[in-house]
Length: 520
Image (cartoon, rainbow, N blue to C red; front, side, top):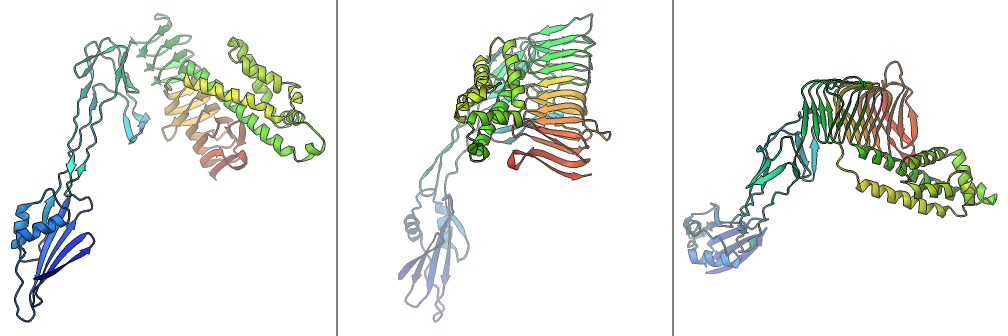
């Protein structure tokens, strides 16, 4: 009996011919992942004699299987059934060994915390609508359990090649103050608030006040977290070394926290700072970044003007710089004066930068500049200062507020508004300001954020001046913004002339404010 081999789409076909032209065909197909091999046979009778060719036997099929480099997982029973088959049924004649996946370690948190929604492998999103109350545990309470995983098993494909199994991921965590490890459990060793941030477990001391902070309690200054299950009355002060939660109102009072602050009541005529020293550091970073941007823009302007009128007038770079400061960059002097004042108040913290400003920018100093490149060391010093300050900033602290009026609020992280909104107040957030409720209002005062403001309603029908400000390349959004609302980005202003909806303000072409909107 003669024969030949056909290859088509990874299939190997053996066709045997008898002398009277009867045919038998064996087709073997391998899956793309080389984990399965399929086979079928078919027999075609001789048209003259009406006889079928002899069936394939096991030895013939096994030989062909080896020619296809199939060495692992051959199903002998399936091969026997294939030999007995009358034709056209498909059989799985070989199976690889699947990888048994590893089981990663699991950290099981045993206390109520903020709801965390996984967005992708590297990013987590806090659901600000469901921030939980502070949980207090006692010594011995199990705050977490580490459930150990195990490595899986390697697989083997039908061509006898190993498929490597990834090792299991071990839980990454460490412990800090107030917790210990007992076997596979993280246990509180003191009374306080359990915390798991940046994969660090701790229990922070908590001071609970089951009522108001008033004259009977005195001002509160505590190294850890503070829970106030009442109001903070007029002229009282709360200082928390970590976070704080206030169930009631804050009126004509002061609250200062280094960690998160949640206020369930109203804030009236009060001063609030959240984030401690990080707020001051972020202010300094904003000032240095703004100064750096202005100086870079100033350099670019000088280079453009050198080829025009000032070149023909034989003006030096220094003379051009002084003219530009007087005519276009007048706020540069204001920033310099502010830094000089801050430097005096902080014991010469910025002396190097201040000295360079005095030498190159302030007063008649620019006239002594021969080349605009003399500003480069100052720009470099500002950038270095920003890098150093950024390293010292801790995890941003956030604030959660329902309603505030006639208050001053500063926060190093996000300010999240879950109620009526903020009225006639000066507000500053290091990162973002979010209005979560459809009718939350930002009205009056100055609302400033480092990167983004997402408001629902900005300003008022009565056209109360409301300033929404972001730094750098930040963005401002408003579902509804009323006329006379001012958008300020990186020192540039835009005043809304008409009541508008779906407003988006940002820095566009030409380094100018672009405002996308629809008129109401």
